[in-house]
Amino acid sequence: MIFMVLFIGGMFGVLNKVGAIETGLERTLSVTKGNVYLLVPFMMIVFSMASTFMGMAKEFLLVIPMVVAMALRLGLSRVIGLAIVCLPVKVGYLASITNIRLSVAQPLVGVPIFSGMGMRVFVYAVLMILAIVYVLWGIRKEAKGMTIAADWDDTPLPTRHTLVLLALGVGIGFLVYASQTWKWKYNELSAYYLFLGVVFAALGGLNTNDTINAFIDGMKKVLIAGVLIGLATSVALILAQGQVLDTIIYSLAGVVGDNQPLLAAFGMFLSQLVIDVAIPSTSGQAAVTMPILGPLGQLSGVDPHTTVLAFLMGNGATNIITPTSSGLLIFLATAQVGWGQWARYVFPFFLMIIGCALAFLAISLQVYGG
Image (cartoon, rainbow, N blue to C red; front, side):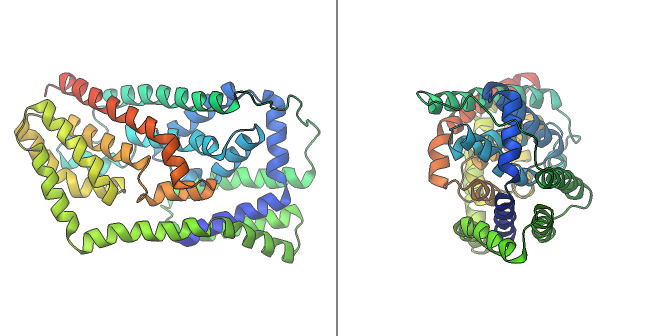
């Protein structure tokens, strides 16, 4: 995982040296006249749909630097650029309308895979509206009093830049295919990003020395993030190997108990919020906690669909902000945004999700007869 982050940084170091991203963004902005209120909602909806229907997340690592570059060109911060990608991806994962990760959670509580879709569609729609409004509010707040260039360079792209951008588009498409079909993991992805860096350098006309120097410069920018990812992963390992995690899960199971259905559902959600800090993996958390929460929910009168929803909401909400999530840290590293910066920006949205989650659980109990 750490090498993957370093190779992503190196690959984009090569892209920056070639200059194709800057010229490509300039043409895109010239077409839309820099209208962020048109661009941002469209991009966020596309990203979220890929996440909620197909379970895509790491596939967007190639997209983040380009969106961040667009934000910087518009006079906005890196945090806003990251939010345009990260929030819809996380919200899509949280709702998981047809995310394959449900194939782990739902059978463990005895319901068919992808059942209860109506409630998750409702959750997705509400949270995506909230996410889009939140990002646009942040853009409006940052852009207040700023003057953004009204004239964009609309001269034709150089041939080399066109070839590099075409290769980037094909590379993203092939990455999606390989991740979904061949189940590529971190080792394969690391090699793929290294390969793309070489391809971009060749198409961009860089010599060997320039390519190596650009790749190293790109890796330097994400080196600290790679170390943090290693430390975050070690936290989960220590908790598991030291059997601390078992104690935490046992204690949080007592929060659910045999309370009234609504209180029990809230207790499930709370337990998932806390456990996600130790087990950020969606499928891993489902495998560990759902066999416990399923029977406890039945004893408390909570239907299986609401139990799954409590799991999704708790896991998804914490994954937006927890520093132990390697997935989030990779996003931050790719965007070159510090965790502290991100936490300050996203914390109000995190609180909004918690409030919405409690309301969703209450509605779910009514819909599914808890």
